[in-house]
Image (cartoon, rainbow, N blue to C red; front, side, top):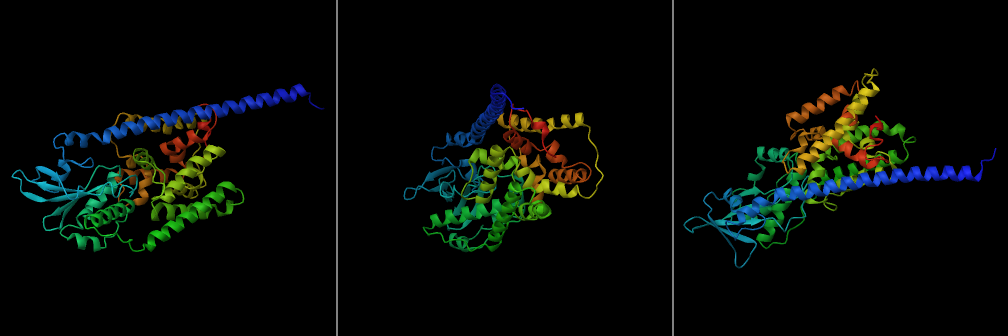
Length: 418
């Protein structure tokens, strides 16, 4: 039986209206997310900057990058600062009797493009009258406190102390495992700023073949993830290889993952498109692919902790059946979790976001006990419950799901794939 024109047109109209509602709903939801993100960014910038401005009122010679209080961490008796007449990038330090104690130089703005894990790592470098390094003070930043504690515990910031500027430039300081991004950035900050101070053209750092190999391996894993995303059925036989490589290469070796701590740092400091190419590309794909295809990319094909849970789930074929009603209630948790984080940031409260997710357990050298316990707990539970962190707790996953799903602001969220 041939359908009438009116029937065909009516069906087409209903389909079009349905599609339009989904598109409009998605646009509204993403617009609200963007609005909240912008407000958080503005609020956090207001929270980070005021201390410098307050100290600057006490001494008009203080740089916009640091205050007298920052200098006093390097020179205890510092009472007055004076910008150099011949070179305004050098600040001379005097005590209360106007005796010259030494000088300080700041890595900003010369090394502002150098990014650690989640943002710039500005340094204040103290130099004595004999042209030796007195100490280094890490200025305000958005790096994970856990990573910085790791560096302090290894006396990383003291490795240049007592060296002449020339010797400090020539020294070969190694990055610290478990805080590679942060320590690499600090080393580059030191090299660039001391080169400027000594009027030496900075040479390129020696080739770091480990970092190069890590980058190539990570791109290969990302390529495998993309193939699995676009050709899921054909690539099914490589699923185990993808899971293992994600855990070993992206997780333990590279410490490469999308987390609320990373997104917060980028929110405040901007995305380091060129200095962190792999992470930036991963973020772009993580947002763009689900937005355009309504199909999860990062959570399903890349996330190292998700891969750990999936492998743990293969240990036991017996699974705990969760009632559909209970499951629907549990799926509210990540939304509430995400909303709580957003509220805390909107209020300008400082919080170490690496402690609210288990991802930093891959950099176990710097991970807190809370994170390690969290990771182990959910891995044990995932033996009997499919990917419990992903399905019922992950705030980062909740954010990505809100971007991915069509329809009303929360419509379809609770139909996430396990």
